Length: 588
Ligand code: ARG
Image 1 (spheres, rainbow, N blue to C red):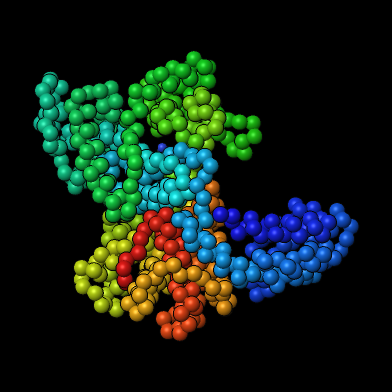
Image 2 (spheres, rainbow, N blue to C red; image 1 turned 180 degrees about the vertical axis):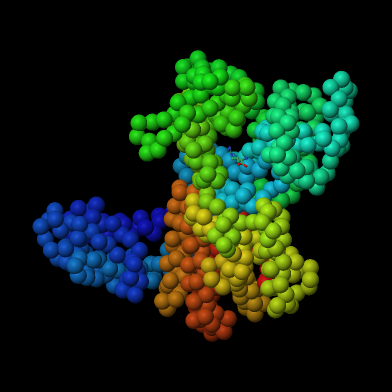
């Protein structure tokens, strides 16, 4: 079905044309003075020069052609040459009744669906998930869901970090504590035990110990490097330990992501692309794009118009080891080969910006990705505490994701308990859903590239621009619906009448924008635009609700019309929170 913007544009274009002006001037925008009009067109001002006429005169002539329009009404020409107008309420109601028939409220299946890969989450095995990984998971999950809603084939890959020094550190640390383990016996040739020699709890303690030790003890640091190297070379015992580490951590990581309502199609690891590395590097040397420098292999990626210096991309260290850039490039080799993506989106901290510039340029230079494959880094900012510094625990340590979620949960349970009308069990399950909305919306409602302050009090509030407020609005709608059904029976085949009040019309106008908002949010990878939209839609709905008594309305057609409007708004809100990655409880 034709989008409202397109309908309006055509309406104005033909008015410009029939008044003798070029149709390209007929650009329509939503009014920034809602008290005066709903939409406006400023084209008469732009046209004045070409036609050597006063803008107001042009505007008046265009307005003359719009008096019989079925789509727009209250069309006026206003000094110095604005064309102001409103939607015709009849036409608007009819438009929405048609929109309500559409599965996705006006979002249409793309002509050619794209294959899009999203690389997000990016946790590192053996290190507990901390809040630094929270943003990537939340934003990536939402971008993935938006893409799917728009009808594309979207593949989410967690891209586990499992190949770096952190594993060597752990192996060295474990050796200190338990040198007798069979994994350290080089002469051993039998099978290794099936069960890991540590629990996730023990593993998580080992890592900070190892990391601290490596900073004080040079010999230990050298052992960790050596262990990393031996692991990469294929030492059996180390490979077996590494498998255990991955296994134990992945189980834990999955549990955390489950709680966040985040899931991945692929659980690929950095180490999975090892087989591609030798050929890839050899090809770069052969093509003459990589050169030796101090024993390392590097690719020059600086470009003439760089505003800052972009150093060469190191693709192999002098000791022969692979780096973060190497595994990312080899991952691109695999992704091109197996999935032929149109677009690959990396959701990673903005401090990794240079890394991605280097990787993307190297990949293009080496022909690893085709020129049609779009590579994008969605660089997000830092999540800060109320003091404006990166979020920490009360004692100043790195906050674990679980701890953070538990704190928000607790706060939410308190709030829900205040007006308690439900069982303890329901309080807990409701608190979980609402807490998740608080955390996710708190994050997603900011433009991703910006830093933001994680403020539990504000995020968990039922008022203002928060997840709980949106859920509250949804829950209110559901409760009206079920009361309606109790009193009046099934809600089926109702249609909307023209709006009777400004409040009602505002809800209707907001609903017409759904498809456009989704389109923009998709193109710009901008979930915050969906947040802004549903906040506005919720506000409009709540105002409408307070101004009209839906349940006690005597006129059947009117009552049903309002219920139809409620149902459509509910669908818009529920589709939106679904792509943001959370859902609403039955009551709260
Ligand atoms: N594991 C990395 C980290 O913790 C993030 C990975 C991002 N994705 C990528 N393909 N480089 O910083």
